[in-house]
Image 1 (spheres, one colour):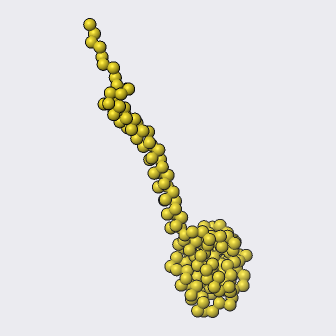
Image 2: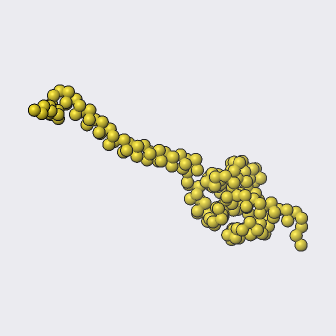
Length: 184
């Protein structure tokens, strides 16, 4: 029979799974409490790192509609619930794991899709959302400027041609209209 504490823990984790756009499962064996504290700080405000019980996490994930985490929920397990940019959280985990090899990324889920440890590493290698959006905006701005120049070019060419003809006509050169002969 389930105790009220376990029921509350499952409900809390279920809500975290539902409210997160990503969850990363890690093994933390060999990390000290101080190192875990440092890891939590390094993840920032958009991610929460929690040491979890595997059985309760499996139940919570299933209740949240996530069935792809079962294979990762063995041994000592912690879950990073990401509510912001998943790239930032993946980078935080990757950077921490470089300095502390005891942290092992097992896998995770991003917007309902299962991710392997290698895919999470690739995610960490991406640029942040802000940088990608800035590059997209820059590319769009360049395209718009190029289009504006393309649309403006015929008008500019026409104005230059007309100005050249006017200047030539003022000098009495070719292109001057012939005087109209008086009809007799």
